[in-house]
Amino acid sequence: MNIEHLEKTEEMQTRLAYMWVNHFKTMGPNDRAKLFEIFGSSLEVLDSLYKREQVLTGLVDAGVLKAETKAEIMGDDIDRWYEWLNAAMDRTKTKCVTPEENDYPQRLVNLPDRPSCIYFRGDISIANEEAAIAMVGSRRPTSYGILEAEQFSGNLASRKIVIVSGMAYGIDSKAHRGAMDAGGRTIAVLGGGVDICYPRTNMDIYFEMCENQLVLSEYEPEVQHISIHFPQRNRMISGLSDGVLLVEATLRSGTMITADRALEQGKSVYGIPGRVTDINSRGIHKLIKQGAVLVDDPLDIVQDLYENGIIRRKLETKESRKESRNSRRKKQSLTTEEEIMKKRLGYEPIHIDDLIRQNNMDISKTIHIMKSLEAKGAVKCIEKSYYILR
Image 1 (tube, rainbow, N blue to C red):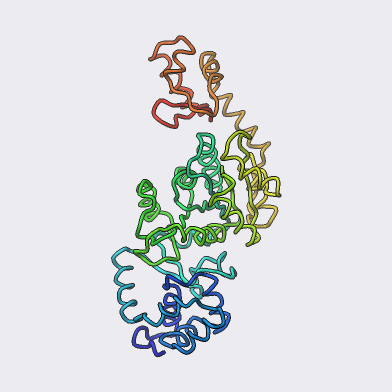
Image 2: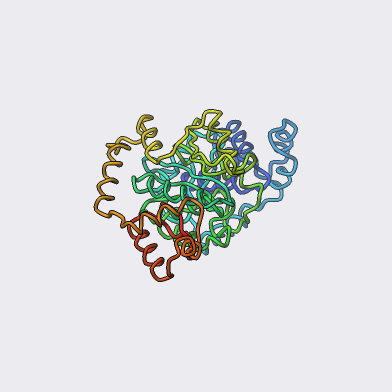
């Protein structure tokens, strides 16, 4: 097919061809990979398939394509589609990068089912930073899971390790927030168009990331986030990372799918252990039994990345950090009343009214003590008037 009327240079024609192959709803990543293997390039795929009923019939008969994909390609109007796509990208401030362009994420280049193109908002260079860790977990996390997600993501991000997640409700959003609060970089991989915030409850994170971080997807603008997209999205989350950290997961969950994809891609899988009585711990504990790396400190991950040659800078050790922490504690020692109050707290939220009753104290004094503990970094207020240990 002659597409010179759409794009003049060969580079732009190749880019267009990748985008064209990517836009069919009935064609998955493995289908596209087969076509590239057969025809050799995106331009050859486009030239060989567009309105070529005989070729398409042969591919269907050979089991390379589905019959519905043949019908979709035969009904396609490339001129009309390309006009719509450019208008949609301009309207939604969406950009695109394809595998033969320099900005394409290098961690995805050699995946057999790599995305044919990536639509994004934000800074695409974040995807090619030195080190990246994916963080995924339960959409209904416990307070313990929330605390660990925020602390691990913030700690890793402060060490210039990019945090990759899916912007889902729960652990994903906490991972993004922890990274941003620490002044680090983070990537959200969506299961629909990057012009659509999903879920809507994460609107604040979404707009902040579109402006200062990176939000990406292999789906065109205006494509809705639907369940069949998420397993494909998960391969990109693991693919963009050097390892996957799991924070709370049931035995059957998208988190476990992401772990499986990471293992298929040869990536390390890390798990934060939870309480044996929690259903959210079962998936993590199963993977740890099967060989996932148990981590109880962000430095466990940093050390592993260093030993695998992914990061090359000088490392802080657990021992040196412990000395630093002890030094800070000496400078901010707790009063007797603060020590007593701290012992009343754990990793389950306690309302300040319960603390008042337990200690037979008046409201103003209890509030003063809790604010002091929070300022000294000993406790954290996770919701209005609910406190847990840091």
